[in-house]
Length: 261
Length: 358
Image (cartoon, rainbow over all chains, first blue to last red; front, side):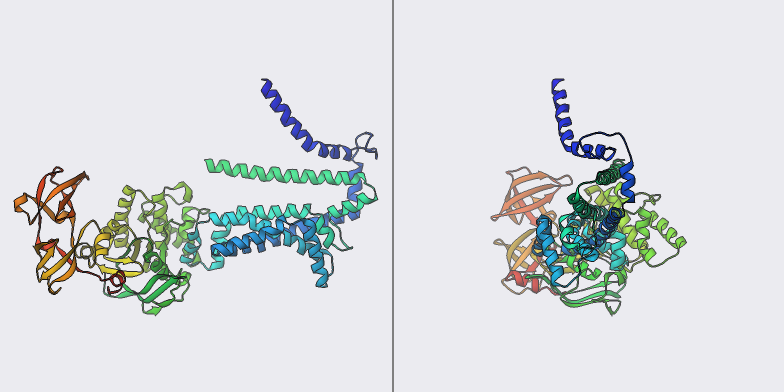
């Protein structure tokens, strides 16, 4: 009995430390007082302000577009790359996998600065496209990482079987290979999407003066003094991610119960 | 089976790096033949099949199909279908979709496809499985679907790559009958790859025994079993006593110091040869009635027969007999002249492989 109480207390403590900052943020986003120390009553004022604030809304729009496009393009490039790597002989494959893993472990600041230098050296104007290209670049390894294991599980003969039955290589890929590796491709896409949403450092170095994503926008706002709209924005972002997670987990759970039957 | 050569392999050579898998292989397959490529793993049998299927291209040589050179034709443009070792069914599709795969590519009508699915499922005794998923089927059922999926395309040739390898013994035997029945009903050519000599002997019209990239012998199952051309074939097909001997003259061979009468001629005089005697061809008789005498050293009950080892003339003779002789007893060994198979002795292993032309 005592053991059970201690166990629960311990888990409670962990969850408290994990989520206390976010709870404070959420509470403050509904606080009508501008002060962080005093509760001035419940209000949705900051949310209204947020949606009226054009520069934040623009940043949000840019963030979502970049996240979606970079994840999509990285998924296409990364899946193709994974298939090629999987088809290699053992030694080149190990080397290629190692090379594609390095960018994930590399410090963001190094990646950010080197990309910036590359764009400047190539006389490429910093702006929307430079951010998009950077995001595609750092997303590709995550896609390869999530698609590779699915390819390794694949029965090598299913592709050949499709060819044998008269399918062209492209038809065989879309009809036979893609459905089998699709969970990995989807994971790669979502990983890329969240990595892109999340990124500050690389975006900061490659964005140029014209555009902002949410994270760079918040950073510049904070320098001017933090406004409660930011709390509201952060709350909304947290809730969207939470919903996304619940949906994905639900879907996986459903699939597992179907399989058990 | 007709004498019409449907597929002709000419001087096929294939190597992976240093490793020569096939060396100047020549082989033809007749229309409506059940041909089996038989050999131990690494003998080149699967590579040969994959070259016919178009999944590998030979370094040298040609694949002729109905008189046309198809060496560089893509697999999807060849008029043959393959049944793969691990079934390779499309797991996200129903059984009906799996079977319809090739027909949809050929743009057949819906009615035609549905008819074909019904017909194919009936043929492999799996009526009513249209809407099942592949994972819900047993190994044997999946294998039969793989066959159904291949034959609905009405190929001229069906290639089978160790299709029964993953099944248990009982199922494997049932499937052997199934395959023979299918072959007779469809009237098409089967090229079958296996390392299981029993499978090969049961089903084939022609067996091609391969080892280390070379063809060792081509012949009917009876030929291969009764008249192996060399020690490898004799040893690989069934159990046998292979005895280094000397051909004294025509119809007389000296085995381990004793002269035996045989039926073979034309080997010359005092020529070293290999002699093959199948264990079931050795008769155990009373010591004084045998050609040579020996002592039973071991005895195993094998179900249909007893397996005994008899030590005679310094050699352990493997004997299969339905009559039991206890260990330690002295027996006589008798072999009928026509049960002694004489083979040329290869001077080296390379020669063993190379000298055997078709």
